[in-house]
Image 1 (spheres, rainbow, N blue to C red):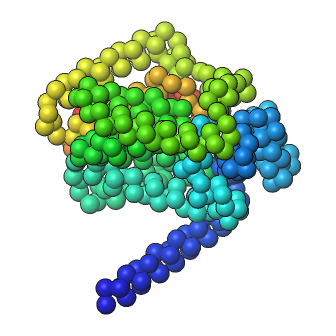
Image 2: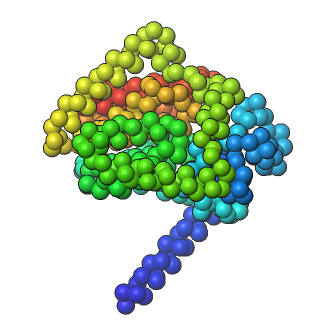
Image 3: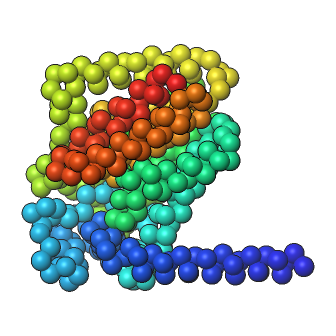
Length: 375
């Protein structure tokens, strides 16, 4: 009987997955997903064919794939050179080794489901309980209310991989699973900003002499390197060169966000980061401080907006952990906070469509971050 129930369960899950993928195909796939997913999957296919995805030939293949779908695509907006570390292709192998048209609806579905489950996973990792109604509200926020999540889903982006790896690393660190924590930290490096988000978590482990975390990190990175070096040669130099090139054709990628507000922005960013550091020291000095890991996830997400250039507004999903944490802590003001923040996002979209999108990625994190400090 148990085997029968298991088979029925598997059939139901399979039907939901296939049905969900068909919904993604009908609603999203033919809209704009190719602008972000197609270049990366094509670069990975180049890698798995035994060539470097960083060569001009690989770029030409990526651009040809895009032009086949959109004949008049303007490559002065984004040249779509492969700008990811090659080991992202190891994680993407189930999709990149499959036909793009067949695989991408499932990738979009994975994106969608990941954002639906994100608040559930966050509160579990953070060790914080919220009422079921508020949890349902945060699922809505994660999918639709925080409009940048839907931008991420529609574009078929890859930022959520870093966010989920960060949640996994935090859960493993909390639970004493140090090797698993190291594996998750290695997975965070599949995007450049993920590397910087990984460093504070690694530093926390090393300060406590948890050397197995470092062993898990280095072992996983070595395995990634072995696979990709065998396929495409030593690519690290090419990747760093590609990062240096990126700012030449995506100029906002070299823009330090606090500079948008001049000297006042620089001073505000410095003061805010100092306040974050002071609170982090105080919270982690108290071994049993409630919710400190949830606060840390929120603080890391906010800090990277003030330290690193942003490639697009979809990176604003890194602010979601801070949003979730504030909702769980600020009981008296959370309805006003949620309402004002979401209303502000959509009002800004209606009024500020011509405004620099990087202003979104500075002002919104600062707003949420102020509540993170005060809650």
